[in-house]
View (tube, rainbow, N blue to C red):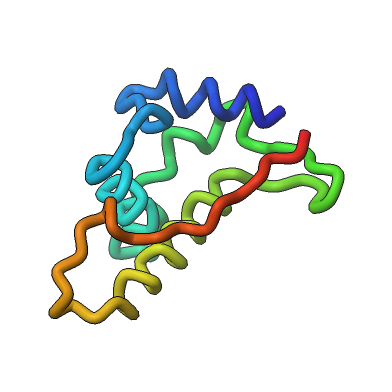
Length: 102
């Protein structure tokens, strides 16, 4: 369930579910880092966790490890598209609102 994964994020070693502002920005940017074998390096903590998979009525089963990795890919892409001369801070970047459906 989504609540289980949220609890996992909040109680992880780095308490990533509780990060806000620049800390959340930096962590999200790091989630798509890969080693020389092109394997993700930051999502391993979640690999063997029971709440890794979430079932949604609209999308079926979601593998949250893959979701985190590709959310980071999308966020990194968005950051590359912003004009670097603007020197925006993460708090100035607009991220679309979302709704969790249980």
